[in-house]
Image (cartoon, rainbow over all chains, first blue to last red; front, side):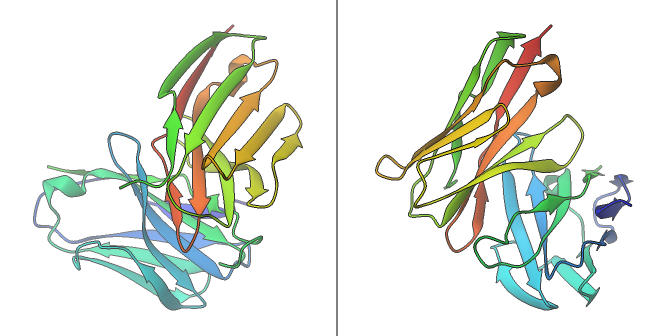
Amino acid sequence: DTAVSQTPKYLVTQMGNDKSIKCEQNLGHDTMYWYKQDSKKFLKIMFSYNNKELIINETVPNRFSPKSPDKAHLNLHINSLELGDSAVYFCASSQDLREGVDTQYFGPGTRLTVL
Amino acid sequence: SQQGEEDPQALSIQEGENATMNCSYKTSINNLQWYRQNSGRGLVHLILIRSNEREKHSGRLRVTLDTSKKSSSLLITASRAADTASYFCATRSKEFYFGSGTKLNVKP
């Protein structure tokens, strides 16, 4: 009965490769997010989706593209991976973006290592 | 620049002592949330305080918010070894901003 799940948990790949990270939530939430946590533990929002529409898009490279087949899934596709992409990526969801129902539920994270 | 910044970066205390962590932010907010992250895990929501609230309690947690100083504090009373984790504040204006967290170590 995992609320927010991500796969894979670990991902090791070579520079230049394309990879995807999957995320699913079974909470019935309308909003999902992707965060990047760097080696200094800063957690930075990358994207959020509300009812399948991208509503926040931070200044991330366009090599990163979120894809949401339905409101329970928000996958992250990364093209032409670079060394600096190495980090832990967290998926999260919230009931909505409206204040008061924006408590976030996080997945366990995907540790991406680019060699 | 980051919106939420926690202080101290690391805190080590004995079991039974109180732990206080602070968060400062830069712009006006709708609410401020505290999260906990155990090593190798995702973040877990602890408590939310709205911009019109000054103090909130939840079990052994006490959160204060001073919007004039743009700061918040999280107090964990009677700490336990199981409280060892990193604690993050998240501020919400238009978007969510997290800091780099306070790493708390509670020694048994």
